[in-house]
Structure formats: C-alpha cells, structure tokens
Image 1 (tube, helix red, strand yellow):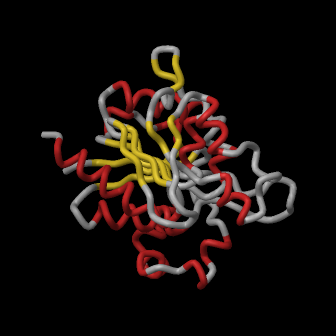
Image 2 (cartoon, rainbow, N blue to C red):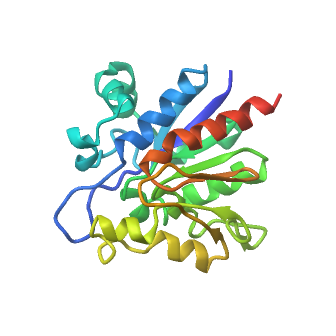
Length: 228
C-alpha cells in the first residue's frame, strides 16, 4: 500500500486583521478522497500536532463541493484531523510522497518552518513526489536542494497575484506567492482566476487555486502508480 503524508498548517491568525485563517477545506478534502479512494494510506501532520485550524470562509456553504460535504460528514477523517502527528516526529522514509494543502495559514508557519523545509528537501532528494496547491507552493520559499532554490528553473503555479487581489489580502499576507516563486527563479504560469490548473515538473507538482486540488492529487497518484 502506498503511503502519503499530508502536511497542514497550525496557523490560525489572518495577519493583523483579527480574522481567522487556517487550511482550506476543499484543498484537503478533494485530494484526500482522490487518493484514499484508490487505496492510498494517508497520515496528517502539523507543526503543533492536534487539530489544525480550518479557514472559516472555506466552511461556508458558498464554498461547498461534493468533497467538502463528504468531509463534513466523515467522522473518521474528522477524528484523524483532531489527532494530527507533530511534524517533528515524521520521517520521510515512512512515506512515498508528501502533499501540502493551502489556505492562507501556511504562508505564516510552514513557509518559515525549518522542519517542513528539511522534510520537503528530504522527500525530493529521495526521488519522491512533492505536491502543493493554492497557497501551499509558498512553503517552497526557502527550500533548497544542493544550494539552489528547489523551484529554480522549474515550471510551477500557485495562488496568483490577481486571485490574492480578488480576495483583498495583498497587503495582509506576509508575501505574494507568485512574486516569491519568480524571485527564486521559478518559471511561474497561471490561467484565468479560479479555474483548475496544475503543473508537473518532474517530482514537483503544483496547483493554482482550490479548484486545482484534485488535479494535483491525480498527478501525484499517477507518479505513485508509475513506481514499483
């Protein structure tokens, strides 16, 4: 059985707005079911362990999808989320791939988390797929392999500046993901706001926005299935 690690934010404050953030439900639920329904075992880890914060906007009925409705009723997954593994206890050797769902939370904690940075590097250098969607490609900001940024010269996507403008948070987030990826040498591309779009460059798989979550999981699954 293939095993995939999901790494989820523990950060719940949306800058200095007084509002809450966290992970975006669809970005965890859609990939989780896309993989689990194909027999993949999934563990979930967070920097702090325990229950990760859910972005309240992603729990709004207006953001609901078939996957989020399934998530809301999935007592087994909800219990698993209450008891996420502390990131510091994770060894990449126990998994075949790693996946990071987005939401704004990762821009504050996982992007700066030395354990997460080292973990991504370890997966990548051990020839294992690494997947990120929406804001999660921002956690690659300080990830280096052999002294160079992991994203240097790689085709990537992620939450675009125009999408950040549309949600009114360009001055709230600690950095603009599109800008940082390009600054670090990535070949960044995007399509129309909110449309599904995922980019695969070797082991690195990135998706632009919540609607791209399942696409990233499908590309991740294809890589897992191609490995004996």
